[in-house]
Image 1 (cartoon, rainbow, N blue to C red):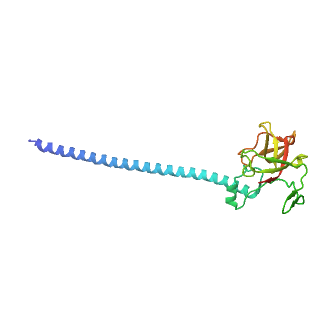
Image 2 (cartoon, rainbow, N blue to C red):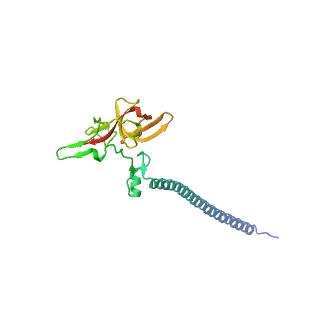
Image 3 (cartoon, helix red, strand yellow):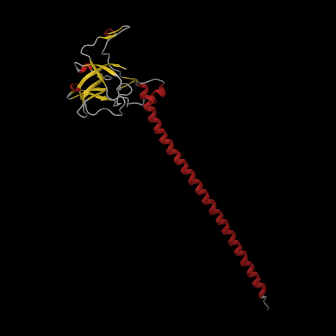
Length: 222
C-alpha cells in the first residue's frame, strides 16, 4: 500500500493553521472582553466616586445651612445685643432689613435740665467734669481727639449701666481709659462691669469694679 505523505503533510498543516487561527480569534475576543470589563470598572468607579463626593458635599452643605438657619432664627427673635461681637450687624441687617437695637447710654440728663437760647445753651448738671480724648481710635467713630465731653461722677453702681461710656482706671494700663460698658453682672465680690472700646475687637481685660470708675460721659460736643 502506497501512502502519499505529501497529502498527509498538507492536511496536518491545514489543521494546525486552523487551530492557530482559532487561538488568535479567541485571544482577540478575550482581549476585547477584558478591555470592555476594564472600561466598565473605570466608569463605575468614576460614577461611584462622583456620587460619594456629591453625598459628602450635600451633607456638609446641609449641616452649614442648618447652623446658619439656627443662627438667623435666633438673631431675628432677638432685637437687642449687649456686645457687638454677638452677631454681625451687616448680616443681620441684610436678612431682616432692620438694624440691630443696641444698648445706649442711660438718660443721665433730663430734658428739663437743658435750655437752649439764641446766644447760649445752659445744661444744668451738678459737679460736671470737662474732658478731652487721646487719639487711640478705640472709640471711633463716637469719640476722637477733636471732641469734648461732659462727665459726671456716679454716686453708686446703680448709676452705671450697660451702654454707658465711662472713664476708669485699669491695672492693665496706665492713665484713664474711656470705653463703653457692655455687661453688668455680679459675682462673690459684688457688682462688676465688662468694658470695651467700640472699635476694639475684644473687651478690656479684667472685671471692672465700681471703685475703679472715675466718671460717666453724659454729653459729647463735636
